[in-house]
Length: 470
Image (tube, rainbow, N blue to C red; front, side, top):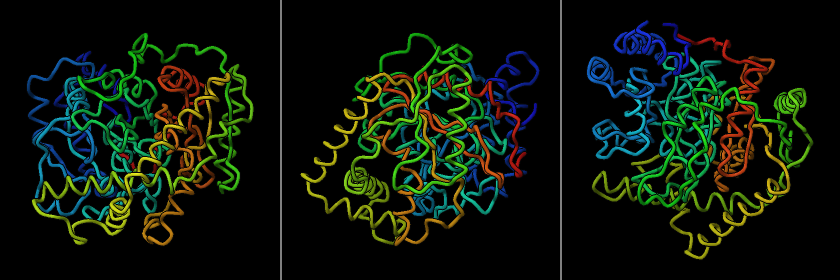
């Protein structure tokens, strides 16, 4: 079985008897052992446990026997190591005590977990370079980052170690590494995938799904993961049909707004050209495309509004870490950037926090007006440049500006709760993937999947291989 078959293809091969779950899992383990030393993407191998699961009585789900990797921050299974990129938890050999709804649904679908992937501490950066485990290398160029916070998962899938891996997105952490590594990355609508038992994560900004190599895998995994749990604060109405059934379906002529760049935000010329080229392709496919964007996309102060809420959430994460460790945290227990950010969060007044949350709500209302006025899809860059060099965010004096300059198109849709997908339609002249983002109104993952699949068929990316691959 080739390493670059997608999860849907792997599942079909198992069902047909072409390969057994044990053979499929052994193949993934072999690829990880051969290639991961160059990437440092899989940081916690679970090989013997995976072999036992593959040889046992697996759930008869749609992905029975297909190997899978969980990001070591989200998708938690009780009993598995759980370190969240934190050195203290690694040294304690901390193991999870609960299974999340998302992880349970992945297990019930028949996936076999072969390991856990690297992540920045607490998922706080758009790169994957934690002190606890060291940097993950981008398989397109090992001197560059695979993005973050789901960088270990993205590097693993891009290099062919597994067909699909878990990812979470609170400010772009599915879409950022998807763009940096040449993958499909869908952030679902708020409430589409339950975050139980955690309740609201990052004030409702964060949600889980996967990074994959094909739109059909992303659609099928959304079918697996979607749906509320009892007591969820947010929930989306069930789709009219399975998302997988929409792959290949004609979305009809759509009205598409395109923004190759925001005023005052520097953008790489090849990234801007990728967005323009995508607009031209959409016109060829019969869609109406104009250069337009929600006015609200350029409004507001992310430092004052988005960062304040995340800083308070980081302070809460510190409280949870202290409970696990059994004592108050000190500066030696966490990375300096996170310590500073949590201290900022603790100093916020209740009124300042509520003002920021009020701005979140208002941004969602203002943004929705653009879709209500007649547009179906917004097309933007995913990132303003290709994969960043490792170490690019090391200096705290410049890291904030660099983060803001990289992701002005991802974080707003965590605030508004809208679904957004990054698709790997283009490459730069120096060989890096370029992701293009499609955004729909809340609850309209169906449109994103139909349009992304149409683009995939028109301009396929499945045959591309990074220099480091299995």
